[in-house]
Length: 255
Image (tube, rainbow, N blue to C red; front, top):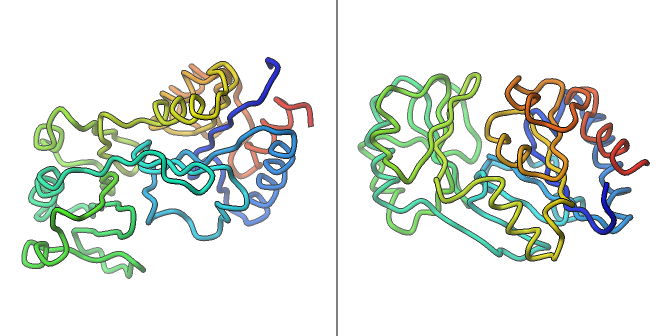
């Protein structure tokens, strides 16, 4: 470790949130100890703002939240960066997804929408069809990213064009704005706070965490992370269900 304040950036799924509530409590407890030392801790997730898990107290437990894989940054209660998907791109995704068998999502700042029907009820998530899409989707819609259950249909990357990146994960795919990434958001926050890049810690488990884990001063992969992430990380901590965030922070900051 180097002297001075650190900025710590944490993914949610597979990283901060484990199978039990006790895991989250342990992680949050150690995070507060780190913050009490003067360091800044941030959520940095691929989830959009409207899709954030409700069991986390973001305002009290963190210094800011990055959502949509870097599409929106809230720092100490203030929105300091926001990049919503343009209307034409939203409609391209809608037209492509409307007749596909996989459930696909439009992840927004205020609302969630989805195409498809698997018989599941989705709270605060509006089902779209080609017949009703114009009722809900217009040029004022605030979409941060897209997601698809399972394997993304062939041709999606071509339809979305060069302004988007399609990431295929285990069990789902993401369509992220190319001008946004977790590492760009991380560096934006560090610069705004006057924290040097080398005084950054990033933790994650999947390929949408790759860039921030690779570029952080200290990159941390969860034990349950994909192998590619472990290869480029500086530390591999315990698994998400063993409170790997708490374990790593205790080690890094000698708690």
